[in-house]
Image (cartoon, rainbow, N blue to C red; front, side, top):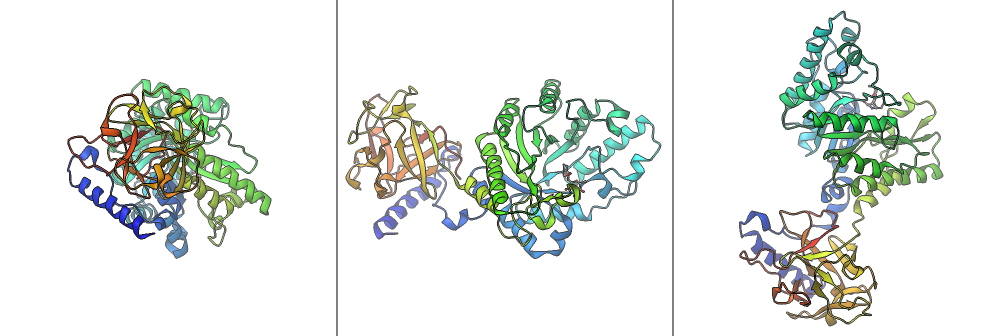
Length: 505
Ligand code: 9MR
């Protein structure tokens, strides 16, 4: 960093520290620029985008392998017990719970700042023998299920952020799957389960979770209709989990549209059990294909605002359910058996790191858009604000060139937003010129607390903020740089609403 740049940075940081002193909660600017090193793992990248990246956790290696624990802790900010909360494991004998594994995972998650997805409360599988072969009346079975849900959710209330309340309720043709629950209690078991869970732990997000619902098919349609109907009846379904156990032959081409479709119901959506298996043995071609499938999954989740988490079903090929369950297939995870990153890891990492976006910049104090005057301009013309009109003159491409740092290029004429002549002076014009990687063409985004999309834009050569001249609210008012302001009486000054910003801290 040059001394001038360091000074500029310090000046800005100083201003921001002052800002932090206002005490007006809605408009505090987040503090100093973060260290580049903080971006190096999946979890730090995901956190910076408001996303949880999780993994299924197996209690055995969690206890026995330091390398496993370390990767889990550093790479993920969410965990799902792969088996430890399944009924057959937690209650092998009626009324006698074996909490050790589940507790160990929840404790680890808590110490590691990870959210736990509890999995699953009601499932047709992994049921204890005493339950499936017992001779209970329907009423007794209903009471047993209620008790189980209450026991699980009460024990982990406040420690489990989300529950897969009902898992795999559907057949491929969209009919409800036969199970002890459907057969004995009728389809009402689903609504009951959600209501019981909500009553016992009002804070946890409650999900219905399934596989093969990631694209348009009868199962996906049936799941959609069920969630819509349950919510219409006031049943507390907060989210839908898409397991996403796929192969290297899967295009995952409809995942994004599916997530968006379900999010349209006003619920959260999540990728809950992602893995991408391949026919063994692995080779470079298959690993490359696998990487593209993982990338599609992360891109799909990032593209849908209500996709709150992406969880992989195990993170290392050393401990994967696949080879045991699908003979001849495997190598499904992000890390190989020695915990080394595979191409899939790199592609998920790259997907989380990619921050380029395209959209308008609205001056919050005026409600008007950053605009290229006479949009055919070939450069040199000072930018202005103008009523937002959805034209190319107001569309800008933000290309990430460093931590929170972007060039801002007009989508129509491909010229870069530039502080004229690299001036550090107050009131220097902000215009457009050919992109040349200059410091006066790079802007750091400082998020304003209280909104996902509001930022100050500080030119990296000067540390000064883009503003509308004289903080005018009129059309045609020009854009200039000005010392970053901390005026508590006018908190929206110099604040730009970036309509497509990807959610920086
Ligand atoms: O990965 C899990 C495996 O170790 C278990 O033997 C199996 C049966 O309990 O469940 C596997 O996890 C499943 C998950 O609970 C529900 N969706 C499908 C997962 C893979 O089969």
